Amino acid sequence: MNHMRPKTRIQKKNTKAILDAALVVFSQAGFRGATLDQIAKTAGLSKPNLLYYFPSKEAIHVELLSGLMEVWLAPLHGLDANGEPVEEIVKYVLRKLEMARNLSRESRLFANEIIQGAPRIIDQIQGELRDLVMEKSAIIQGWLDAGKITALDPNHLLFSIWATTQHYADFDVQVRGILQPVKDEHFTDAAVFLEQFYRRALTPA
Amino acid sequence: MNHMRPKTRIQKKNTKAILDAALVVFSQAGFRGATLDQIAKTAGLSKPNLLYYFPSKEAIHVELLSGLMEVWLAPLHGLDANGEPVEEIVKYVLRKLEMARNLSRESRLFANEIIQGAPRIIDQIQGELRDLVMEKSAIIQGWLDAGKITALDPNHLLFSIWATTQHYADFDVQVRGILQPVKDEHFTDAAVFLEQFYRRALTPA
DNA sequence: CGTGTTTCTGACCGTTTGGTCAAACTCAAT
DNA sequence: ATTGAGTTTGACCAAACGGTCAGAAACACG
Image 1 (spheres, rainbow over the protein chains, first blue to last red):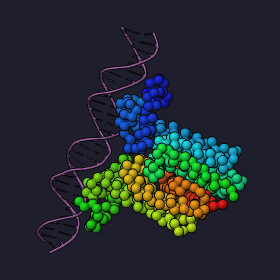
Image 2: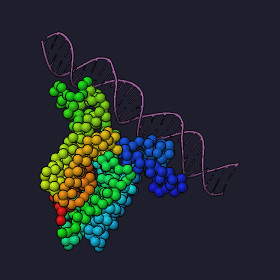
Image 3: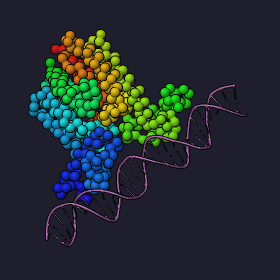
Image 4: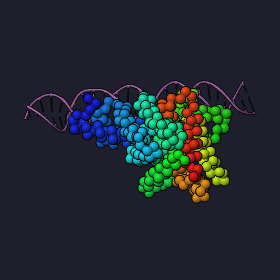
């Protein structure tokens, strides 16, 4: 009944199994494309049992997304106003790229939701995400006012960082289809490229 | 019966209406999320009538995607080996951004397909797309070998261009949620940003 | 006009889907 | 061992889905 906080050890184990399975299925098929049977099977549970722990398919999705938002914003929180500007931004880029590599399913879950109009997280976008972006953009604006980095719109700079890094998670199939890497070596190349790229674009003449 | 080439004026009108409607619905909901009833309603036709022109839901989707690929690759074809390197790339970036603005639904259709594993266009990705990228990457490689642009991995440079421009179509909701533009003025800002950004990153010292 | 073809539709079908429920099973604590 | 709460499931349901089909309506053309 109380799905807020798992109490027993079985509850803890099963809710985790469900959320793990749901992440796999939702990120690959989107909300509508995912079925409860798929999720249940992946989690190793029966469908009714799955609905014993979560009231609905949508509830699982919402739980995943809301849990994801803070993970997603964490790297940006780390952008330090007192650090060395170019280094801070490069560090942020590389940390974001690392997330695209290790949390690619989460990235695709997020991308699916946004592309389809973000019906379930539009509030968080216009709320905490927007607030955080405004705060960090102000820091970047301060840096470029002080001549520490070249003059560039801070908001669009952040967008470009999200776009270039998440691209390696969301468009993974395309990147692999073109580069045909044996393992994951393209991530190393991507890191080198992005570091050079941002360093050159940001470092004042 | 013959769905290859519309003959009569009614066939021409209705197949177009269906494809237009399908683009709207598929791009917003994904393949699985879209329903034939939605498409039919949007096209102003009945569901059986829709299936009179196309044999199945999948056939509509395939038709849309295959028609889209050439439109999507067109700007890259325009990258001229004989042009001024930095200008050529900047021109490509801006043309891509213009596409993200004017063909945002097509971009989202494409993004939906790729994120979910590109089951229907993986061949074209590993085929014509890969070939074109290889060809154009060689041109860029030639430019940087000649010292016309800074040293950067050509493949990843192209990825970054796709990512940063398509971001304004695919993540439109997020961009709007953060910037809250009255109209489309953020596209102008994006164009300014991207031009400055790529110019600085690419122009040799 | 008549007639053959194209276009369109209401009714219908089998399957899949999200979700329910009563009953059975498991488990921890007395 | 009993008990009561927590857990699991097979059977089931209504709605939505992609798709079919016979026949009606609209159209083109002599």
